[in-house]
Picture (cartoon, rainbow, N blue to C red):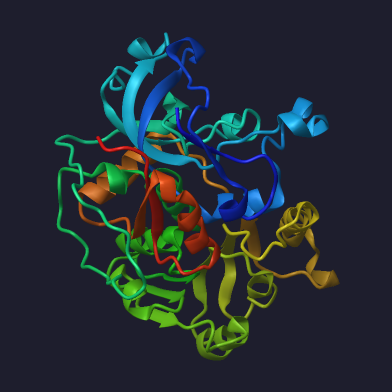
Length: 386
């Protein structure tokens, strides 16, 4: 099969190689609760780009830590496609997952980081717990095209609909589950106020839409970003251009201390935003960090960032710590949350904003767009037509 692979850390646009004869998984490789899937679309994630710049392939596989020559990885998590075969336990535990069913899902972290088997390939193996069928009738986009900055325009949220395209479905699993689970953590209710740092990221735009559903028209959503029209189109009430209002925490202290936020969700990973948040985050409320974009792109840079995430909530206030709750969160895609994501999409409450669509042979150029931080929404790879 075809698969994009890498053997060392670095920029994906420079380290990835297309292997036209990569070994393909077969039904014999399936565990009892796993699925063999033919991939149609893969959605790129900025988090994986960060990890690829910092960690080699298969970083958690002990044999490969000591044998650099055997390191080989296929990147990415999120996908959509068609089931080819199912594990022995699936017919009784997940009768909704039959061969030929169109699905969306997320690869298991163990397969990606220990075995080097990610989504950017013709075929993959995924756990049934992280896969859900697309609601029929299925829709298949006929002519998605790559978009440049000049042609990307926000579109209104769609009305309630029954079907979801394979293209859109590919970017809903990890990011959609993140949006729902992080909003659950904040315990926001109608009328509350929320600040989203990184509102123009793919996960940021999904969070804004889910938050709008939770907060209703009486709630207030403030987001940071450079594309105000796009961010407003997904439900933000106010957009702050962080490039013009730098440092951002001083702007928030000056303009939002009179009515502090009921939650802050940081999709970027700006530590100063938390360490200065007491004036603009209400007492007893939660600051959640989802991003690691500010981590230095080296192994020790990533280790230092992770260490800091564990240290921040433990630092005593008496010794200069922050008197607000802090949590670094990574989503855990599961069947129940995936179902909630699909219901919001079907109800017209949530849509995936697609920045651009690239062919399988153009993956390096797609990553260049990610690395340049020009992407406004999901960058998607069309692996093969349905």
